[in-house]
Length: 271
Length: 267
Image 1 (tube, rainbow over the protein chains, first blue to last red):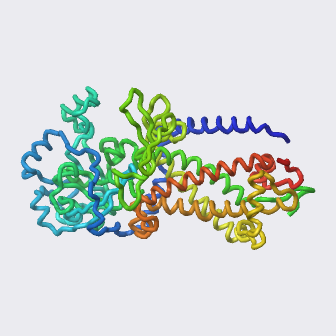
Image 2 (image 1 turned 90 degrees about the horizontal axis):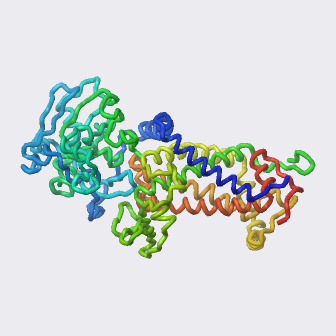
Image 3 (image 1 turned 60 degrees about the vertical axis):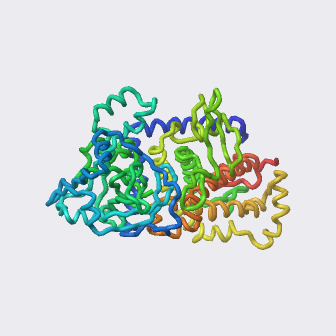
């Protein structure tokens, strides 16, 4: 049987083109995106099964990045946040509420009075880069114990002060609708995240108020940010305002459990 | 084993099946991987990113009238407009739309494609490794005998001259084939998986040594990228060889297992 090589190559190129167009069709539909998420679901189950309470690697002082790249919001323009920052966060409180026995309202001094943990860890961004920083804070489990978590709670929902559509408010790129939404202080673009108790109770999961031996600065999430060392950066919200204990996140905002999750990123970010 | 007069069963069913699944996975992994790379089109060495000194970066230069694609390797700049940095209708992106899944820049979706096929790839690879080690396929077909190793020079020259073995000799992989397949299947692909795992903060918490094996997470990312291109290079040579040494016979033997020892086309 003879075979025309040129037509074979043409057929191959056509196939590749059709395949990529097909891929674009698959991932454009919600059902397609859900199906594609099967790989990450397997990763989630596997890591939960095998990891236990494994600790992320901690590095020596000398490994700390000279420049730690800040990402996401770096200078929130939300009026509420700007006012708190002006006063050096003296009036800031972390609310802990939802499915708890004793709702809390904690000042920075309250948090600093709790046992502290310091860790030098690698921060991995979903984009692919890594930086190493030193974080000091109190383990989230201390705060949860103080509040008394009700049995039915399954997730900790973190509410943040920063609106994501205000990130480029000063730049000419911001559209009019972005500007008006920002001016109205629309809460719908505020950063938020959820973690389960596997992470919330992990020894390295801390509410960090200090970075590289100095109080947390604004680009890195002042006055308080979360560290979840076995997941990617977007699971570690900055500018924390409130930790709410919830049973389910499917009815919250986009329903995927976080700002980036609502944009299609996986809820579990261990890879 | 002879099936008919000249037919010879060249490839076992498991080898054939895993070969095609592997090929499919590698296409998806490469193309979704290039989309993921576009999110941060720089490579670094060590545990952390040294933003001011990437080993390689693919970017664009907006200073002129039209944006220019600029690829920097170890500090040397190359203009790569049209393919790298700037492609299509002046799109500023590292790898062009035709090479990525999805075609538009979309890190979240690209990650889903990548991890889905990564699982299929790993499971398929485990099936292949288990079979090929337990059945003796590796020992028999992929590790050259001493006398074959000695013939590596002449065999390589034959390859470069595009002279291929016929008849009885074609029953067995030649030494160049053995070594290429062994290096790809037992060295490059497993390193690829380990380097991929090294990029997972979850996996790293269980195995601190894993990223250290590569010199850190960012080194692992760089090695993952380099091996991807070595695999592309292998695939190009492999496809060329398949085409030129009797394409129909080769493709049939990888689908049905039947290889005709007498029907080969002389180059």
